[in-house]
Each structure stands twice: as structure tokens, then as C-alpha cells.
Length: 239
Image (cartoon, rainbow, N blue to C red; front, top):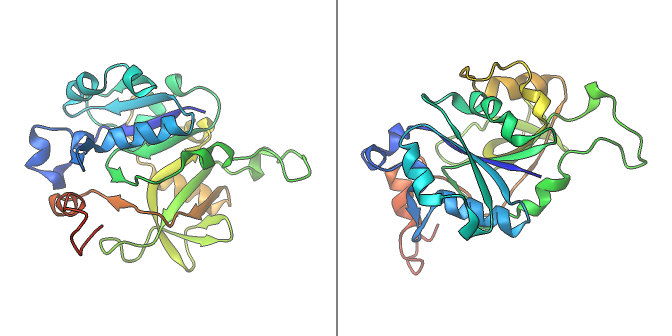
């Protein structure tokens, strides 16, 4: 399985930090956010990793290089202007191949996520080995988390292992998902496109699966959240 780390965002809410440093290179506990992901992916045997970038992308390539010192092989998908999540994935499809792949937001912190589990997230047949017809296969598998304070209403409902647009309980999308390449067939390479409408469209068809991840997870969306993660672990407000 291949992986993609999304690293093209401007990080407006993180300014002024992101005026001179791309958001995925901001450090948590002495290590860039994106490096936490690379090391966790490699630990699970996922070593072919695509990284898209736009804002200050040259810094990302200069810092990470070809990935060999992490035990990975890194490929870069440069965007002259950020293409949004689905647009960035669509442009990188030539690098991601024809099999399901995992995508990770470069600006989240989840140091204990076990990427071994993503390898079996999408299946083509039932437990008896009977192939699912194309319209019954999950097109994506999302990892959801308990709603943080800044997303009190969540993004999706979850019924057993089926992600829904409505219903209770509701959870927040973690920024980690496994996708079939054909999910992005309708997106023209190089055109900007958001991921959320695409997921909601297929969730309405019953084609998005998912589960709840209950480990440590932070959306590093503001300087305050970054500072909280970098507080000494001995402090009472340990993240």
C-alpha cells in the first residue's frame, strides 16, 4: 500500500508561524509534524509516500529529501496553487497507483496511530469470499474521532461501520482515510476540488465505511494548540 501526506495548505490560522515555515514542518516535541507521520507509516511497512505541497514547498523537499534516512521513498506532487484536498489527491494519482491508498493530513498530531490497520480497511469480498458488486463496495474508509471543542457538532454519523451524513452519534473526521483511486475519477487533474462533498455524496449511497479512533489526536490548527502540545509533559495539562 502507498500513502499520501497532505502538505499543501497555507495555514492561515497558524500565522505568523506559517509565513516562513510550511505548517507540516512546525515542530511538536522537537520533531516536525510531517516526520511523525512518515515514521509511523514506515513502522507499519508503508514506505512509498507521496507528499503534495504548494506554500513554501521547496522547504519541505529540502528538509525531507528522498526519504531514505527515514527508511522511506518520498515522491512529491507540486501544486502551483493549492488544489484543495480532493484536487491534490487527483493530481497525485499517477504517483499513487491503482490500488487503495491511505491519506493523512499533514497538520494533525496522532503519535500512536497504528497504520498497520489501514492495509485491510477496504475489502472487495465478504467473509465467505463472494465479491461485492462495484456499487456495493466501500469507496473510502474514514477514521473518526470524538468531537473536539472547535467541532462540537461533528462531521459524520456512524452506524456500525457505515459513515452517514445524518444520525447520531456524530464524530469528527480525523484527517486519516483510505481511498479507492476511482473515487476521484470525476476530478480533472490540476483542478481544485474539496473532499467533503465527495465523501458526502458517496456516504449518501452507503459507500463510505469507517470506525472511531480513540487514541491521542490533535488538529494542530492554531498557535495555541501547537503551544499546548509542546508544554512539558510533567505539566498537569498534558495533551
